Image: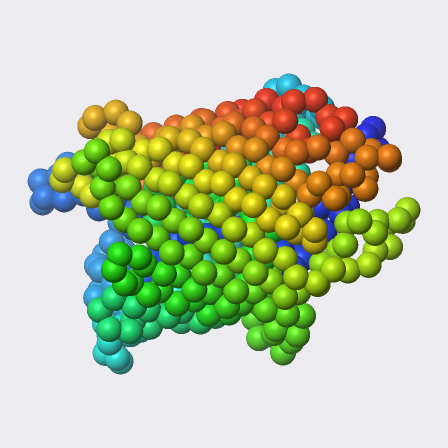
Length: 435
């Protein structure tokens, strides 16, 4: 495809380089989760177990003859999922074929108290493996339209630990985490964002809104401090991508990134409402887009920032299940635009669980976005190629056939940053099995 569109080559070269090195991915306002998202476990009577155990159990493989429950009691929990996607380009620029891709996500977590060691400690892991022929980017989109097949970056068909970190509660309200983090894990409990591209939205914009300052996988420390009326999340981390690193000896050699986020939860019109403000600053050096000569031999520029505000408001809430709700979400951000590849961004939508009564485990979402990419970069490239802002919309619905089997459909419409590409319509089918 690139051979038929040579103008896209320099854009992708630069943008993919930027996305894979110092400042790549998400700007999370979520606090560190003590465990991966829980799989709903319906009440199972002896009668239901005898008649329809396979349809009512929370996982396909069940309790492993009591071993799973025994390990959980001893502080060891497992969550294994396989997601299949069938996705292609219905209209736009590029091949119109559809391809299959798959993703394995495995979580193995340890609880120090249940293991008989000390109170409040834990060790969290997330292992990922992707396979198949489906592409993460289609139709000239700069941001991945299939997040599940974008992670782990540059390691297809390899098992990679994208999260390996230690957590410790500090009293009843605060906590700290140290280690290796997959930023999408930090969105795990968010009813709109997050979901790793396998549970909810597929586009990277919604799975982990890019700030340009958080690597694909980072190493550092995260503190969660709950005060009144604001809860704080503070992160200090290395600016480089650490996807394939486990014990690096060069942490913070190229600078340091600092993230501070404050969230205030209140009610509006009788519904839960959250206001969030987030600021990120990096001391690392990045490409100075104003100095791009032919051949992409560049100079660098030190220091970059991103500041954002969010508004979340529940439109529907379940009285008996506090996590079953859906609502309206809005996020706006501004950045320096050089060396950060982001200038400004706006994301809005509705989404969550239980759009229809009686379907508490179904999830849905409808979102729109616009990313104003670096004005300096666009001006520099204007003489040689078309490079514009990226905008789009996505809608999905995930149907819980059983507590362990989900099927869904996804549709994206993207105005790609590659200006020579037509607007793209990208449908997909998705299934997930929880083992």
